[in-house]
Image 1 (cartoon, rainbow, N blue to C red):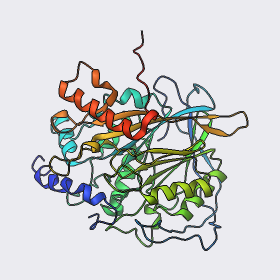
Image 2 (cartoon, rainbow, N blue to C red; image 1 turned 45 degrees about the horizontal axis):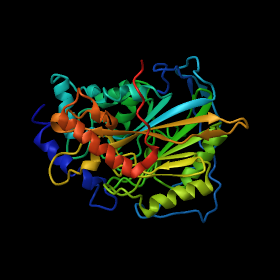
Image 3 (cartoon, one colour; image 1 turned 90 degrees about the vertical axis):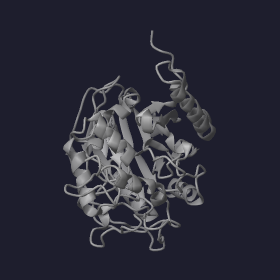
Image 4 (cartoon, helix red, strand yellow; image 1 turned 120 degrees about the vertical axis):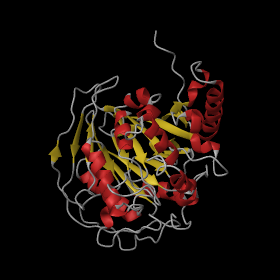
Length: 428
């Protein structure tokens, strides 16, 4: 096992950054009742998708330089499917949490193998220092970028992660993940199916890839009395096109499709719509022109309430129009690239964004200002642990780690400014 998850995989990991770049060579259960307050959740999934009644002129062309166009037409109804429920802490108010990329790259996969004593993989310790923060949210969402390894397949040449990472994500307190990414089809549809099976086996919510046309229909999660839809799209799947007879396998960024899906969700009763977009340029902090245009178009033409970005692998700024926010790039949460010339310090930075939404007197769901906990993920002898970067003064940490946390905090503050959450004093 060690030799198979060793040098050959390190070669694959070393080209991950290039593979993530748009336009490069072929790219290359909801609900929780733990935490400080119990959360009431239930799931509603429309049975089919409604007709797309948009003007024929609303079309686009190929990504990544333009938005992709896709079409799907059906009709919709709703069918309640209760999942985990508990007494609401504060009906009409919900705190959501979001993080950036969670990726099983070879260095942290090998560390997880050692954590498990060579018998499987244990990623759970990597989340130990942020687990209390994530679990404090009423509903927490991650971006899970690469597919779970299908049974019988090797570790190379395309990206893949053990199913144990899915278990660790749930154990860390996450309720759901976006799955649409440029790597979604790296292992073909068998990778999508394996990923869905791993998520479904433990009741972890997912969106962005699908095992059937019905599975691709937007679902609705009710959190503390607020009905939320979460959608996920990627700019492309370079080198691995969607099957022509199964375009629903991966959601591609398409203005027409996003608007249609948002309409589907509203028709099914969604009061708040979150869209996760896998877009932008890797390792570039400022959002590119397409990212900004996409956000503006969604604000102008859809009822999307919140946009959460991934793919840049670095922290990007936050913008808003009224109480409709876009977090352009969440950085890396658990995603550590190997050493060498491609290592960029800011690729160890990430955002843990807390966003509270509440029902106003007129019934509208209002988004409060995001509150950001800056994170930093270690590598190598740092055990790939995700840290709260504000812990730079924690005496239990080594001086080297504390310095890196302080440096990370400075980098993140320079990007997101006063969205950073103040450090809370310890409880008496």
